[in-house]
Image (cartoon, rainbow, N blue to C red; front, side, top):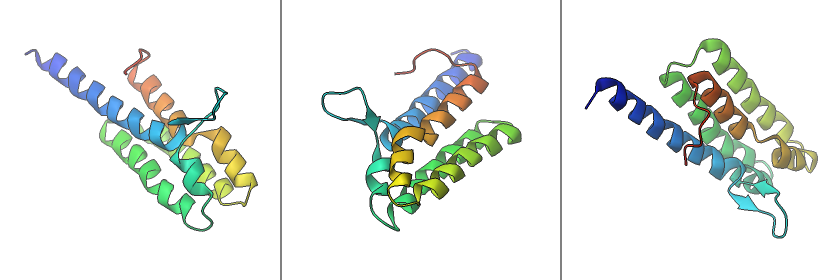
Amino acid sequence: MDHRKEITGKLDADLRHLEEVADWLDSRFTVPGTNLRFGLDFVLGLLPGVGDGVTALPAFYLVYRASQLGTPKRLLLRMLLNVLIDIVIGAIPFLGDLFDFAFKANRRNIALLKRHLGHYRLLK
């Protein structure tokens, strides 16, 4: 197998995995009868004091894995900012839950990573 194809295949697999994590966090479920999507970040964020902290761990994991893929520091800082905004505003009762429903920091971060890596095609 060509070394470049092997690297590309691994990168595609890594991105699919990261996209799946982001999907679970931000858009795995649909409000019945609508196109509105939400994930575990919203659901667990409804638990006062615990939910936002629990969902922060996989959000930081996404940024960590992006760093392992050679993402520039400036882009990593932007991704971290998205996570921190999600955590801080998400911790505000009720308003934070609505924000979590709409902001989707993890999907934003995957889009930034894919744009950086030049992957515009659908990976699923």
